[in-house]
Image 1: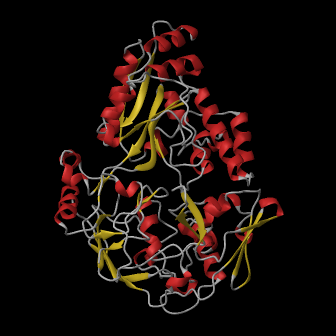
Image 2: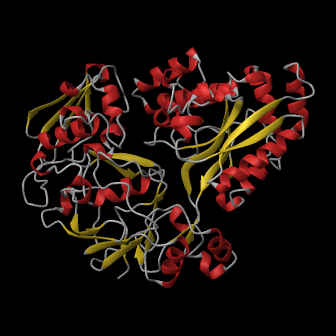
Image 3: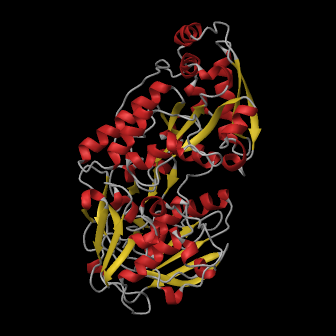
Length: 537
């Protein structure tokens, strides 16, 4: 066994059945209701309970591959990509033995994306609402028979299968919808059903006797049962994994810093450790409508003066991630290596290039701005301090202003008017895709039409008609290679505008318990693939 083995293949392959797979977690799920979840680990885990129309497998190149799940095949596009048809597999049943129908899928999508059609007075749910954005409306979901679902879109969208893979297409029988209590006891269409759920304490899954292995290309469901112990402290999670009292940390974000240092220093312990890319990128955004940063050369000076090595050190150094030079991480289709603003072989900055850009901006002595960072996220805060120190070397005085995570996007950093009013030109940020596609990563942070008065994610207020056109073209392009080339072009154009500076492709240091079998990383969720993990025989 070698360090990081699960990032490059399957660890402990086995076809043994039986036993109880044990997860552990510091807090609870955000929600087991597929309409109300937005945590990556819940999306990964909830597949044991429910089957969306489309799922993910692993292609020969190791990258995620869309596969039919509840549907018998991937979506059938027509009308130039404005209509998508899915036909359900025969014989899929809920835990009570009743057949899953197209109407159950339609109801699931409605309650997640058009809740006002289902629940009086409810206008939003907690999960993604892409269907609301692209469907013609509630009437855009048709069910011509019990086995067929038809989606009608406002405009062509070539990547619609990615939307069909979201938890919001997991079927929900209307007769069993107990919203808002449905989150505690969703009805199973997957291999396991809820046996016991004590929120904040414990979840136990038992087999769904009506699940048929031969009809499921995504899940192996080899264990007899699955348990999750909730509300455990971070150090205790690490102790349980290392002591053999648990098999997998549900959150998948990595061990505590003190545990990390100890594990990486021990050659024997490293064999049970993986260090995968999570799909996240740590970056900061430069608002092009604030003070001197209106000038592209001032923004480029900031890019060149960035000490990315110091910023990475704030997260724990090399095990925490790789130095980033692109918006798209290596795990997302469309990633192409390029480096518009090289900061030297040691990643500490190119100060001469920064000074040349300052001169072009008419600011040879530098300028003042402010950096927004979440003080309750200590690593982010320390990275912001490292950024400030790096900029000061060329005369850019950047005061780090403390904020809290609560309301960061809805009330302060994600409100363009607030940034302008308070002279905040730089915002610390992190980003990952809702689905493994360049559109799913780039659109919200680079499309001018995505800029919002509050809750804004296009924090640099990037407004480029060329980028908007590239995104629109990519959305309706069916050829995968051509589509990926368009995402790479968006990445390059956005970097040319210098409104975002990626500094780290994020990695985690995670431990797998010694009993765990069939362990492999999922690039979709940035953690172990919970649909295939089992126990050694």
